Length: 239
Image 1 (tube, rainbow, N blue to C red):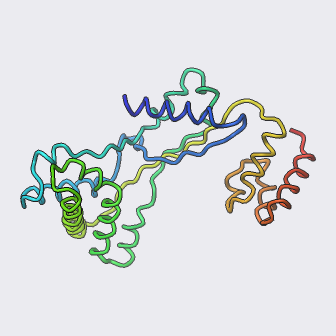
Image 2 (image 1 turned 180 degrees about the horizontal axis):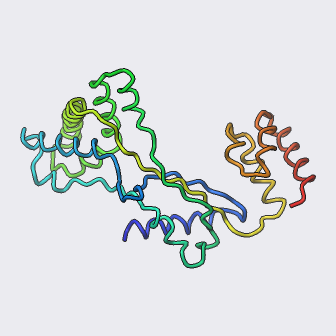
Image 3 (image 1 turned 60 degrees about the vertical axis):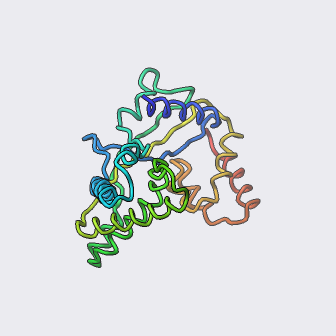
């Protein structure tokens, strides 16, 4: 329920911020169509590492019971749900949604080099940066000194477990294109083009018929010159 409310609130606020014709690309965590959140290898190793610390007396079972990672991967249906009735929410329409698997670069490097130790250490470093501070909030007493010791010991145990059981991680991601409905006129489109004309991948970002123009404008580094080219091009178009 909280995840649904958060997604709804996110969409409403983005709709309020975007001008008519404005577009927003959202890249976020997801679940596969089989309802798999992924990261199973890492999650299992993290749980095992926490159990190791409990057995060593570094943390208590009570503290572990309070540890949570407040991350939620949505399904395709959950992404689409706010748009079901009218096809839009607060004037914001969902143009496309794609669920795909991200690359596990750490495992790919392991397959190429064969260094299990590096595989474990790299994943452990990622997990330390992304989740350890959240887990440490469950620690009772000890302050920053205890938290740092907890980080170091948990990272070491996690790296050891992952090094002993290498494998790929499924990394489900979602890419959504949101479009604010309504006509922004030439001025709105002009501002959109000027704001994005310096992007290195402009030709990939803008949709036809702007893509061909994007390839030309991409090399223009002088902002005033680029704006003049944008306005000149706009004046020749029949929208």
